Amino acid sequence: MARSTPAGVRSRLLGVIFSLEQAPAQPPGEVADLQQLLKAGLGVTPTLVLLGVETEFYQLGNLAEQIRRAFDGVFGARLDEEKLEKACAFAEKLLRESYLLPERADEIRAALPEGPVLVRYAGEAPFGLETGKQETLWALKRLWASRWQLDAVLLRGPGLAPPEAASLVQAADELVLDEALSAQASQVLGRSVKVWASQGRVVRVV
Image (tube, rainbow, N blue to C red; front, side, top):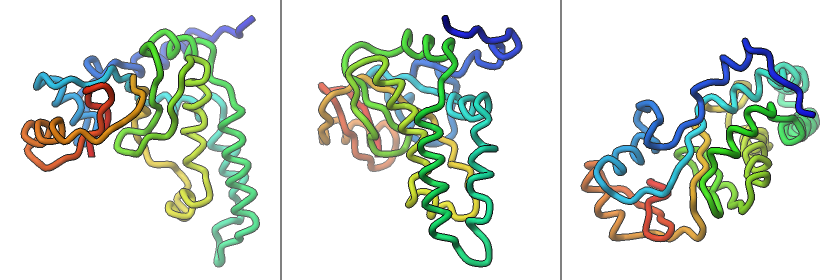
């Protein structure tokens, strides 16, 4: 039986999963671009925008503190490469194996579009293409864990906190660079962009 969540915690979980149409106005970036294209009448694939769900995952599992302890002594006067590799492996495994709250998992499942979905960060390349609801939940955790791959951590240096970005789940199968949609989107957005599409609908704007 799933463990229930106290009412005080439930109140903090509200309002962080949105359809693209319902997501609050975003700062300049890909989510804002997709919203602008949608308002202009372009076909945009059904998109789920997860705002703050990754942060919530860290907080409720006390993951940040566990990761901080794992990285103690890694970045000092000299980089301890052996400790770094072990700490990255620990952090990745921790995120992959930690649990989403049952209420949150159910909410995500209920909101997922039908058919195959693409899982990625807004403004970043596709991470995984999934065909089932449970597989999508696993893919989200793998997406969040990818922030702790060795190369990603080295790019951030001593500042361990991952960059904040909305997690996207989008109805999509094979992506193609669509020149016609790219031209339309460039006109709407007022700058030159490239659009990757699935079944004639906008998925990714670069």
